[in-house]
Image 1 (spheres, one colour):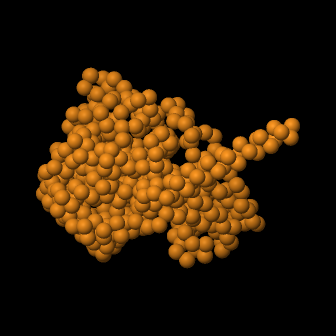
Image 2 (image 1 turned 60 degrees about the horizontal axis):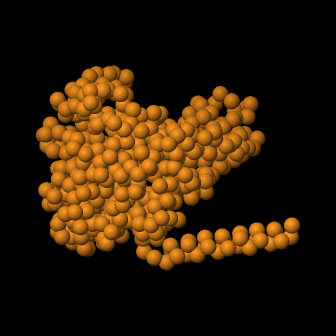
Image 3 (image 1 turned 30 degrees about the vertical axis):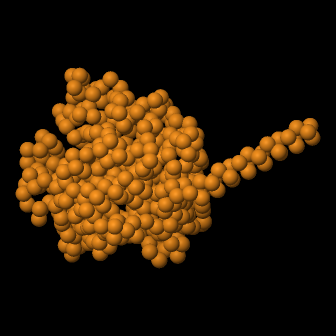
Length: 498
């Protein structure tokens, strides 16, 4: 028995030593932070295997909530620390599981090249392989094979057609029980990133289960509840390390470009650059959609969705900080009825301090080839610190917006997996034309594989040039952006990882 215990101890020591060596080796090289720390801050263990079962780790029964109580209230600490829908959270978890496998097989630098290894069972999305026999969804809701069944499963198992859309999620749940003396009162829920609540925000509710929306990711928050001048104990939690969705309905697909890890070991700052869908309608575009305003009035709009509710304005002003800044419109003038003054977001700002810039571009490699002047102006705008926060968009926040997100994220040093995730999250939004997009080729706009081919063949990205290096060369040589502009963007957008 003693010999067995001794042998077990020796093996355990070797495992710890080996793991420490691997971790230290990764830290010793540029590109060592592969951006797969998706659950380090989320009070849940990262998944270790990819799953094609929709009931994956993201949907397992939640652990009992911890109670924090005093004589006034019993608060329950939240245990779901992401505001993403379960199917979307599963997608991110499974993609990052594949990322870890890639790193283990190919080395810590592998995910900073244009790899062909994200997905399961040999599915190579960069070559346009479909995850089912269906072809791309067209604008009438049908498929090229004549069917209308929307049954796409993405190659890592998360069915985006099932469950809640992530830009319609409720937020972080705060549940509490008041004492008998405080029942049936109006409650004030106060939350802050500082323990002394010096930067606190608050809202009122008559409910004992409420949701806090649009919090920063991977950040510690403090929460308390009060009624009739009596406070609860303070609870705290750290939000999950997932992409940051913004609920600004009826606007859709609004997200923060910040929060992602980069090859330098730094994080992209949150709250500076946002991406998403449009606000104004365009007659004759995408058929009739219904819209309900704050008064409950509903009408049929022959065109795009109009987003002008009290809640969407509050989200822009308070949660996104868009009381000033810049809107960059990637659409053409034909998509805005020709009057940019009514296309911009000045009505979201208290003092009309949001500037507007139209920089029309095409999507995917066509935009990268043909719109270098607009791309130069776009990145020069990103480099102006006094212009932030910035909100850039096309119609749905998918293709043109997705390519800008790819270029910006690549230049900042995001991994290929996270670049694909950021692009693909559109499929988990309420974008009316959402589908699993990064595998699609030859559709009306869906040309991610074609863009990857262009980057690999025409621009020479591949096994000898990281995505970050390739994007910097493209911006310098093709778009004639200065090195100073690139450096300024990185200085503005990157911060030490916590």
